[in-house]
Image 1 (cartoon, rainbow, N blue to C red):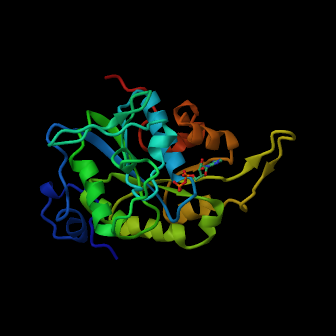
Image 2 (image 1 turned 90 degrees about the vertical axis):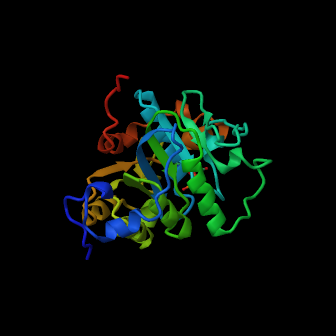
Length: 283
Ligand code: ADP
């Protein structure tokens, strides 16, 4: 049972309770570079790799930026970074002695990824867990994130050491869980949800990716990976926002060609609503 009050705002500086939220969050927090600014941070997680977490992160960021919010992606999937390629970014990140600059996509999304700091994009990252976790926290603290309204963190899959460090070091406002229908019948997703609970971070939405396939010839819908269970799991964890994304070969093509920004993210509307990113933002 959590000892955290229902009224917890996760701002320990205004509260004197000695609860597990304070223990989980306060000791390891890493500050942003003083000139950087990030208002909201959402972590996109999955129980295992290959379920479309990076694709969903990219679509959420592209749509949020289209709606007029300054958006950023911190690619924390250090050993399997796919974000720069999805946006057609192949340049190195520039930096000074003090900090690194993010690269900008065509529409202006700010991106930082290990693929932008290794010599060759195809070089594997053969670093141990603590080094990887250290790099991710530096991506938060030593990158000159400029006036960001929404940052999406593309998390490493699973519930290991690196996700734990990220949840303790970054002020994550909420988690978006990406699953496949198969994943939902296993315990993997529940483990990810329970990790969020232990860390006292709200799950703002669940995306069931590869939920169905609509035949382009006859229009029939097929549940290739099994019938959807996403509503049941969402109800079990009291998560209100649920989105279903179909299998769509053109999305995979856009990810490969670096043109994911051109894809509409209509299917993710419930999630964007939950993030309060549904209206045009007047700057
Ligand atoms: P993860 O980040 O979970 O490892 P990715 O986002 O990299 O997964 O997706 C894995 C592969 O599946 C990529 O090639 C991606 O383009 C493809 N993919 C993801 N979602 C879909 C979808 N809804 N329809 C078709 N292909 C998809």
